[in-house]
Length: 474
Image (cartoon, rainbow, N blue to C red; front, side, top):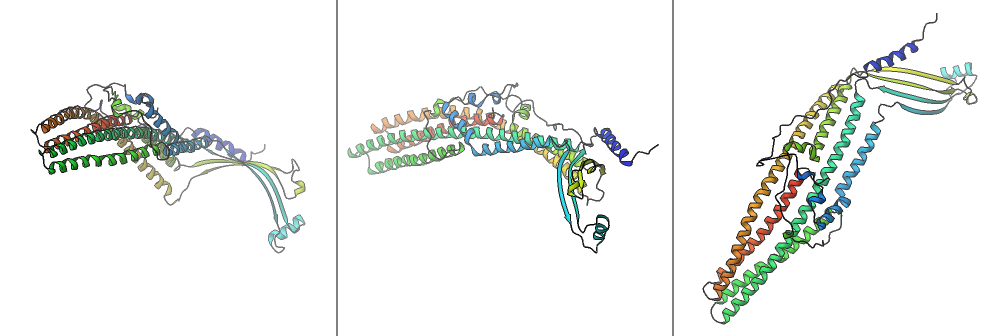
């Protein structure tokens, strides 16, 4: 009875070992870290799952001019384009990771010529056995190599690659939400500057009227030249606002154009700040929703998933690896016999179990570092959740308090405009001096400018709330 060859025993043994251990896992599967969240946001008396974050940005921003700016930004903004390219790179890496468990297959074609020294062992052997002073060898082979994923290392590598793709995808959505919010806030700020410029021009006309009246009274001998000088100074202080506001308008227009990927230029607009209404319908949902709706929070969670998978790779690297290799082809020391089949055929197969013994503690260090990095990613994830809830709470407070401020400021403007009319009548009747008129006009101007600012901030607070809840990427 013939004894089986050693390689006939080893290869089935290696295959059996890989099958028995293929389901072994040395690391834990990913689980979302626990995060302590309140049941509702601060100052919210009632909350359900409905939220404005579920609205598409076109519905949240119904104005066609603003929609055009946002759409142009989504098409041409360079930060967003770079983020999309990072997604393309990550997608290619995911495609490559799918083949990690597939054996590698190489084609090898080699021709060698060796002229050894006649006094060397190789030279003497060639002369005695080959009757030649040189040695030739021709090889054509197909080589296969496969690492059995016994400890789940390759699967963890695939999970890490997929997690990096998802992290990049969520990060891109976060870039879009910020871009949409920045364009909207810039647009509302531009409309606020338009309103303030209109207020300044109106008050400049009013100041011109007061100056003309003062000159008439001076001609009539009822006031002194000091009254004219004070009126002129008041008029110039208002006139000074015009170039300042025009400068701010041009800078804001340039900023919006750059956000939309365009060269700095003016922006055509047929809307005013008063055309926008900060309504009260601001459903926020529950704080737990930020875990699934906020792209930056999702990206932070994917970072935890990646760190968990990389920890699994480091843990699996501490255990032996099984690598199976095989090859076959044709080989000959004479080119004339190279394709002499079956004489030139050869084949080989081998299996290797290897584990580093002395690696300068590198594997242990890698494992400890991976554990720390996973802990870091968990902390960063929890911090991102805390920041998200805080941003929503801040935006809610802003929208509520700015609404109260707007009501007060609007009442203040009404009172001061009436005060201007009364002061002018009293001034004409010589029952009030020019300082009272100038003071009333200055106070009214500041009140109107402040009201325009508060209205714009109220709209901007709504935008911040929309973004902080995770809206803007749909």
